[in-house]
Image (cartoon, rainbow, N blue to C red):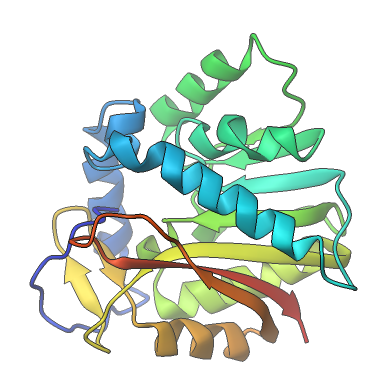
Length: 232
């Protein structure tokens, strides 16, 4: 998703409108499988992003009821930037879910020389169902805007079944400051306000156990926050 602020109409996407997903798929098919492509030309923020994610993950393991450290999921993995950039440093097994075949092939290629262990799923999150009780942490970053509200709730509910005891999901997302949903017609995505993200988390039967703002991003970008959520 483009991380820059765009003036856009406040719209509510109909979950049944397949065009929302088809348009997004067509957009990403034209994007080069590079870090710059994944970050909308903002590859310069990648290092800051990964370090912020690592700090947040570290803070989660300071909690009393922290998850295990055996297996993670990279949801909307793209070319494996997050998997290789920090998830593999924390989990011996990391699975990747990505709907764009070109990106997933690039991820396989870049991870081949490493000690990566895990599966590759060529699916959109709206169609992904995890195995039961396999993940300690499911890391979902900069992809929720490509799911409608209805599909997002359904995805969270399916993820609940895929978590181990004490397992959790980390969401890292752009948030609007307007309090409204903003549509980006370029990549067919929405950016939600924090209040709506929390509402959808609640509707799916989860609660926020830790939340933190990503620091040191350029001021002209959307605010980015990380949410660690667990089933109620």
